[in-house]
Each structure stands twice: as structure tokens, then as C-alpha cells.
Image 1 (cartoon, rainbow, N blue to C red):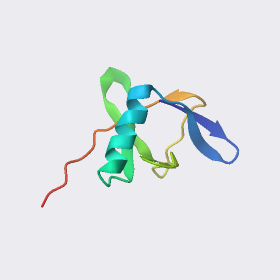
Image 2 (image 1 turned 90 degrees about the horizontal axis):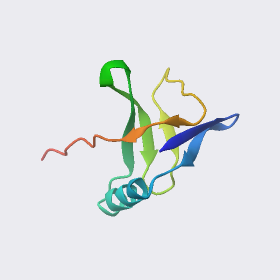
Image 3 (image 1 turned 90 degrees about the vertical axis):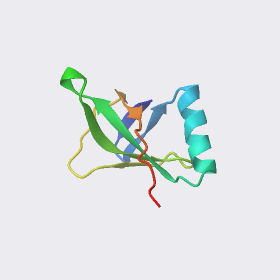
Image 4 (image 1 turned 120 degrees about the horizontal axis):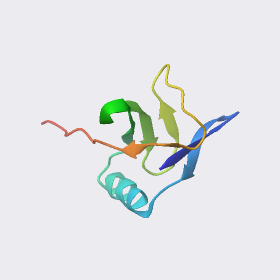
Length: 82
């Protein structure tokens, strides 16, 4: 998915069909927020924030800045423990 940087904050610019389906499935399972990351140098994942599975609201981690139309990837979704 790509994020857009605006004066009001960060929004989803474009989303792939599989990402839309994954968010819908996670939302149906009661999962409200899904983490997303960016690939760093050397293919190291960097956690950037999370997206609401239904509203598509974006919450960035403190101190994280994104580029306009930056590509991010969903997950990984941590497993719930009993």
C-alpha cells in the first residue's frame, strides 16, 4: 500500500486488492489495528505504525516521518497469547 502525506496527516493513497481483503478479514476477526512496516536497507523491516482495519485511519509511531506516496507493507500481525 502507499501512504500520502498531507497537511492534515497521513492517509492511504492506494491499496492492493489483497491488502484490502486482509484488512477486512482481520477486522472480521476483531482485529482493529494492523501494523505496517517499510523495508529498510539490507531488507530489514522497520515498524512505522498501524492502520485501522475498517476506517483505514493511520497512526504513525512517535518520531516516524514518511515520504509522500511511500510504499509500506502490512504485518506481521503478532499472535495473541492466552
